[in-house]
Length: 197
Image (tube, rainbow, N blue to C red; front, side, top):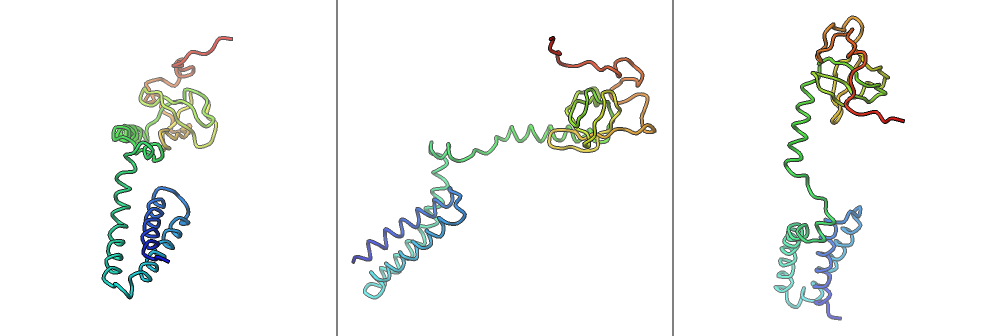
């Protein structure tokens, strides 16, 4: 039995399994196979050169120790650049996409504490008018009728969370510029067409 060939084959297989463990979620099963293969490689190398040619055995261990991180690093660099790797691995979002989301989040966070009116039935999601702008929002799980005064209390993703303003807290002129008694407040205009039956 030629242990030297088995040592090299087991080393190559162990490195391949370590690289596979990086890209394939296996719950550690592939890693266990890789460790067993690498231990078998060292055992075969010891049987091949351990007593007869110690320097060759030491060089095998050094070579294997260097080959492991170099192979893993090379795989991490090369695999995502292949056509198969691009299909398998998820791409990170572009900087412009992240930047736009952050800007929108900052813009909406400035509205916390402002008051406005509901434009549609909130059950719990719907449209509100804050600072003259129609915005998607949701109530705190309660149904709000159109035209009710609301206050922005928080953000939830890209939606505002609003709370009905109690009777004593209502103001005659809200941030959207409508008087409470005006016809436009009672029946706010819709920004979409209703289908005709």
